[in-house]
Image 1 (tube, rainbow, N blue to C red):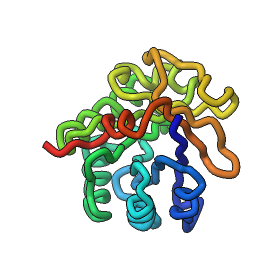
Image 2: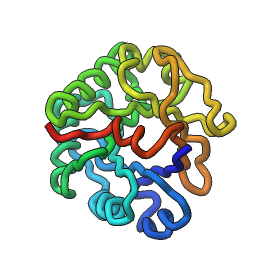
Image 3: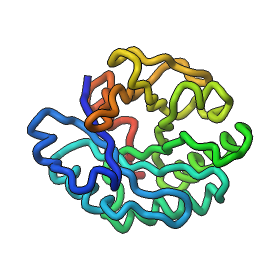
Length: 198
């Protein structure tokens, strides 16, 4: 098992070197939300993860009422400004709000965002979500994308896997004091799911 955390502006300045020394293997940092908002700590987090030799991940917080292509372009632009993607880097879509839309519209937004990222960046995003949200139909058609499941109420490594997925890839098992995650596999296994230059 590899151990990871995920952070956003809510955590402020993160001691990446300290986390790495404590055995952390990978991390995700929030980069963007919607089509215009950028996490002010993202560039610092991206560099900090890289300098600490962690497997680096960046995520976009989905706002399904917006244009998925505009949102994906904003995410990729933010990544480029922070230094860009290197071999093995991970990307993810945080899909946990419906913005008052029906499930089919939420799922369509997510599919279009993910496909844009695949076409433009050549990397397949993870989809972060939770059981009830997926079971409501908000994740229809996303089974080809690795599942990052939020299930802090389940034992570590034993989350319930909602449809349309058959298995989990990352399990977020705790929210306190930080969001903590595990990946069942090696560092090589994890980076194979990340960016590979064409």
